[in-house]
Image (tube, rainbow, N blue to C red):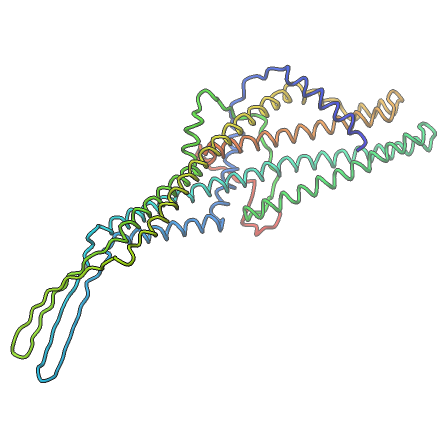
Length: 435
């Protein structure tokens, strides 16, 4: 684009300056940020309450609870047998038989159901965290794009006004045709950038509606002050072990292991004992019976071997989930701290330098103290730097949400207070219509 070379040079200078600067201590959360967190929590809570995925996970929990209730009941019901025969001799018998749970399979089935319930509940917790992280990531992207879109419109308005002034001055003979063409090209570039930014904002809002089922109704303003991560006081490995995704994988491994043990018991044969009483002609009859399957043709060992392989697979997947989460956690922490240092530098050194008024630049250009190219360069650099600052703030909160997600503390961070505040970030009651 027109000023890409100057822009790259400016960003390089900022980066070189950044690495020689020692950032101050990260700021603590203030009251406005606390209210902001409560507003985010309200959006997330409504999203989780109405999410089909969350409702499906709750249904899975209810199904597992029903399975557990059924697993606590006896496995075998008694059998009633009635027999009557009338020939020359009349015979009548009434008998009961009962298969005995000789190997305590009922306890094994109950333990399997309990392990399955724990795994389903852990999956539900992991899903809630994933959905909350996804919605907050989308919110931070919308907030940044919304502000960038506002700055893009501002740039277009400024350059549009400047192009008109340049045309007037060209007609008056004050500037050359080349300077007028430069102003018009800058306006065309600004219009294209504004269109691109607007399209990205529309996509982000559509993504928000798809995830949350809610329509964004007001602009989201992220606080300047940022939360702090104290690496020395955080046990990264403990965070990884307690993370819902790791816990879900661990519980699934335990469930599969228990299913293997149950399969080993199920294959074993149980005896059946029967008692019958009756009458044959003038004589009373009493009979005892005992039967047990002879597993000589098929001992069902293959089902146990398959379950054992599945258990080993689940255990290795749980270990891999822990390793992945540990790496993600370390990366998220370092990424957030890097962006946080850059943001502190921007607040201390970058933002105050943008206080130069666009009106002053325009006045200098009108007075002939500045060429058209210099004016356009400074205006473009100033607005590009403002946009870069907005993108940096969006990346800051995105990195913070990624840390909270990786550490498994996102829900706790959102629910750190029970104070109720009006929610201005989303409203489901408007049926998807903007207000």
